[in-house]
Length: 325
Image 1 (spheres, rainbow, N blue to C red):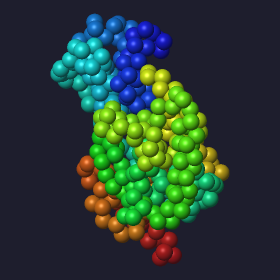
Image 2: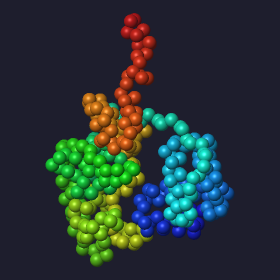
Image 3: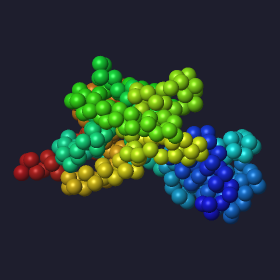
Image 4: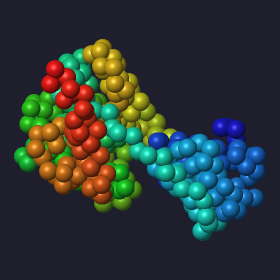
């Protein structure tokens, strides 16, 4: 099924339009599942009510989160509107997912220090930025050298989640290693430019036209590039992509395991820890909201639950009893 001509054509369609590998894999997963759910019928034979039935199945039978159901819907809207050019329109009534969001996993300051002590060089720097600037994994890996503002101690995030831009803090303690990292990127760039086929770093279409030659300039290179050049899927242009997402998550998990941390730690745990530790240090919630890039402060408020002693800040009656005795 994964190698079907239909899905292969869909993958190529997205690659040519420069969708991110993560978006391509996600959309293909949900579209494939949609086709299997309807007994392998071709999507052109299915109507909006079939989409509604599938979304209801995800909510009722699979108990997916609301965000996951929304991604599945986005994939199907893309399939019909963009690929098949048969707009889906109103899919009608379907059961919306309502599974309650989990409380975030947060490391203590000591646990964070222990985790970092297990890392060195580039890996230490990447994880330090995840925690120190509250970055999402993909935001970190998509950073260009120009996005580091040493003078104002800021990191510029372009086209983050929801296509939004924001500024977040930069720990001054990272500046020496960041400058060292930039020198390493410059070495890679000079080496790459000697390759006859080298097309430069990937640039969004509009920017590639606006800034001719930027693809081979130092400022536009990824801050954390891949260890080798490769041919870009879809275009077959020789480029140096950014560091691999899966590898970064594995680095974080291994460091947590070596530190003896028993929590389920991922790259996103470091972002959760950034927000919680800011609040613990007295930052107001609006500031934390801006740093994280949350559209709604209600999303940020989940971290206040982590800060409270016990459930909702209520002291257990057992504690009163034990204190009395």
